Structure formats: C-alpha cells, structure tokens
Length: 67
Image (cartoon, rainbow, N blue to C red; front, side, top):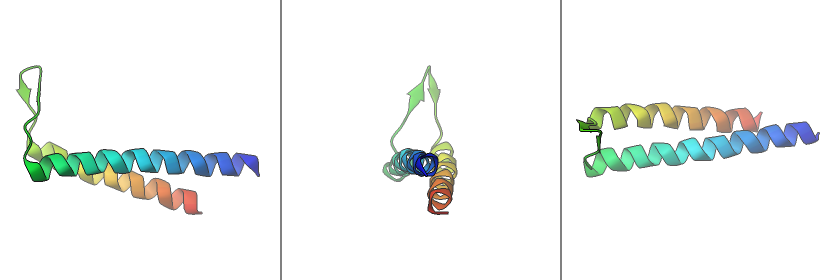
C-alpha cells in the first residue's frame, strides 16, 4: 500500500511541476516576452509547442495518479 501511495505522490508532484512549466510557457507566449540564450532569440512558437507538450505531460501524470 505504501508503494502505491509513493507512486501517486510522485506522479502528482511531476504533474504539478509540468503544469507550472506549461503555464510559464503560455505566459511567455501571450505576453510576447523575448528570450535570448547565447545570442539566439528563442521564437515564440517554441514556447507554444512547449506549452502543449508540458500541458499534455501534466495531464497524463495526473490521470495516471488517479488510476
């Protein structure tokens, strides 16, 4: 029983972290905040794609924790 509780907690923590990352990417895309790393301007479409991927992972982890 303790192993299942640990697994569920881990999945919820991971889902929360990925959810926060998704929200940050969404905020960057909506606010049109420029990001430059090593002289490379990160395009906004990359944050939009990262929002979709991180959001999907977050949802997936929460659904797995619910089972």
